[in-house]
Image (tube, rainbow, N blue to C red):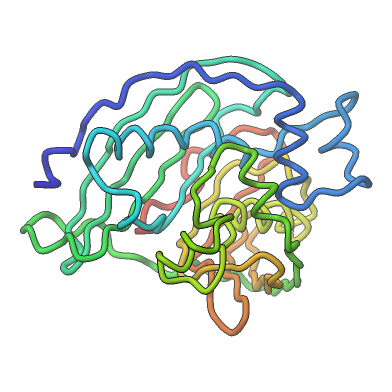
Length: 278
């Protein structure tokens, strides 16, 4: 039963990266040659969403431990809290665990946490058809407050963006192989959800006149797939330096219940992003 995985320790992994990895990530989420603060090593700032690539191993470890089969799982939601800004290069320990197992009725959700001195990232894995085991349903999803000021933007993705983003570490076949994508029910390879979220998070800084590396907390649900080349239509409302947002593409909502917090000091406030993104 899935409940036996709740609280399972996934171990600790030493992660390391160089400025080359930081620059590659920035390019993979849409930075260009004019974004010198993100792609030039002499003045490099690390996008906080890069942390999500450093903790992704914890989800793979949960799968390897038998918690779920990758072919039958979906990335349902993501949360990120930044404790300290990431340096342009470094090595540090990341601890992983299965934080919770939720029974959603027909489906189940695993919350898998990767945490370090720099960040806490939570990967919510949605398991269709595996609910109904009598477990707790978990916190109810709540709508993000939109705030009073409205902000919109259209952000184009590139046809090659999924192929590039794979080089940051997520090499799941559905993002590059048409046969694997069709077997999973998609007409062609899809863009990584974390790539979509990284693209949008970088763009949202403009909504509150912040820099993208000032992001201190982020959450969203992945509600529909994005295909490389699609345009992301971002709709947001702001309250101070907090942005409530959702994102549409090709007539569907692809990111829902989103919230981003930007902090000029670079430290995540204690109550940055609310917990209910499941």
